[in-house]
Image 1: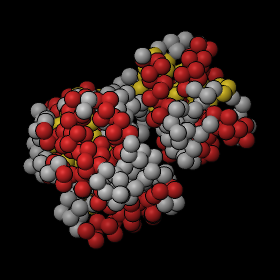
Image 2 (image 1 turned 120 degrees about the horizontal axis):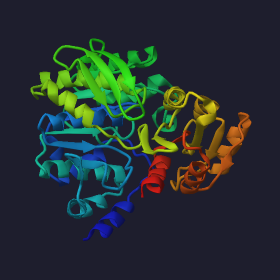
Image 3 (image 1 turned 45 degrees about the vertical axis):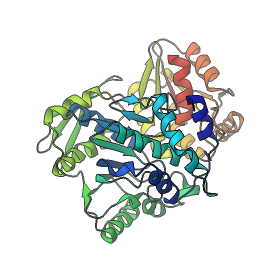
Image 4 (image 1 turned 90 degrees about the horizontal axis):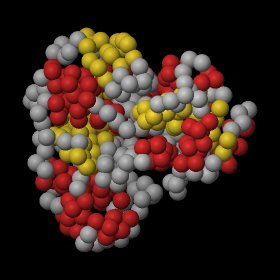
Length: 424
């Protein structure tokens, strides 16, 4: 089997169908002799921010001298970029070899695993073969029945709970919180970010039921200082942590993510994994995370941001006002997935812009650009409309002035295609 054949085999598995339950991924992991048990993990769930939290913890642990496996989703640059060891994508040869080992198990049962479940098993086996010291693992969807919920965490993290994926996770914060709180494990701290009262009550009940200590970052003081579109400085007040850190992730929402990361460092230390204070400072300074307030071009400034729900759009709207105080300097390229709260995203974000271009990605879940344009017109906004991300980005950047700011957002599928257009 070669790499194209391995990819073709994986592409035969269901990709868009969400299949709750852990039986299928456990079957695959049993075939690999349970690699997920070979190393400790930090398990991260949440509606927003979990990718950034994973990136920061990955950077800090690597700066502390550990060999770190990082698992995220979806891919942004390449199919392999969601599986990394010390920042390096899984090699094609390794992905091929593990897929070949799994080939028979993938189709042995009528209840086929999803492609995400297969990739999760491949990731955990790659981490074992690479002899990592610790894994930092992002939940794919929800938590309780997500394929990643088989790891052995030393700390579990729930960043936040807002309305998203309501068709799968439920249409209330309480229902979604129940799904996400399912990552809680007996005796393992569950570190929780800011939650609405209804979600917090569900999380408390889950922790009590399974015997997981409930933890928060309330004891960590974080204040945002000087910030540009390249770097942000933060003053820190907490035991055993630097008094100041520099972060290359510049979205305003990163303040809450950073607070959780710093508390997670304290909890990881308490679990017996030493992390020097210098590693916190150096690791954070080195973090880069594609598609999260990422500046990919200047004159005009082009920012890629994967805001894909109303909560993320609200945070982005606040950032845009800082990045370009003059409204006439702002340009928006927007594409969303059809199963998202499109009207909520539009209401939160579009009023910040005078010039709007809509598009659709190549994802089969993409909302057609013409439909998105119709939704904007219902909100009183006229827009340019393109059926491809590449054309939308190229035309908008060509029209923008050198001092303007172009924001490309709405989904990570849009961000990924824009990134390829702008970076090659």
